[in-house]
Length: 291
Image 1 (tube, rainbow, N blue to C red):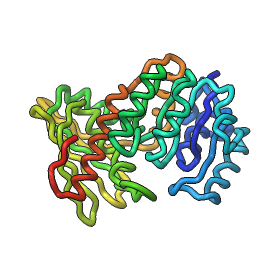
Image 2: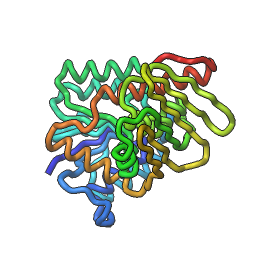
Image 3: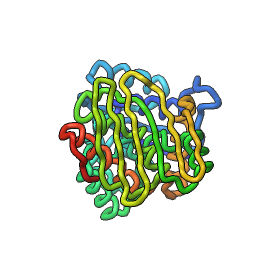
Image 4: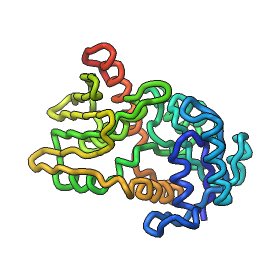
């Protein structure tokens, strides 16, 4: 049994991951075996105030999980760490604090708020020989993976997803990560520049590669659906069933903690962050921005 510590309680993902690992009333089809949550560290961010944290702490404690405000206490005696902080601007600081512990780490999406910070996370991981990965749960959506298998070697990928409103920082970086990650999963790395068309409905990102590939990402306010199409010699459209997403992602996380074999290369997360940051710049400048 792997003992997991979770750093951060401003994200609902902390509750959802813990529910699937330890909650006695979690439905069988959502449960994930092989690990448990031993402690959670809480602290306020613009995404969650003290009252919200108190409610989440009460839920975790009802499942027998210890909640603390002290990082060293939270990570004592754990085998692995989930960095689950809604505010991506805090990821680099906390990753640096835990990178030298010799424990595998999962960083919840997005990897960081900027490309520069994401690159420094990769550097800290390399310097400390820390195994980690970071991704959106949408990357493991069976419908996306099926479309990628049906349309191998695609040159075009169009995806859509919501544009949630960030409590701080860029909404495109914070919530656009889901649809951008689906696009990058289909087309792979190599994005060169992004142009963003923003309006009252949301934003459309056109991602250019240095070859014949092109990605289009539509981010919509108030439309909480995910899907898209993957096209090459073959074509496949998909709509994501979101109900198993947390469970599918958590299974990959636990498998990684068991084997230390990363399911997503850090360079993928770095590029996703770079695309998102370029898209935010383009939304402000109206120009084509380099990745």
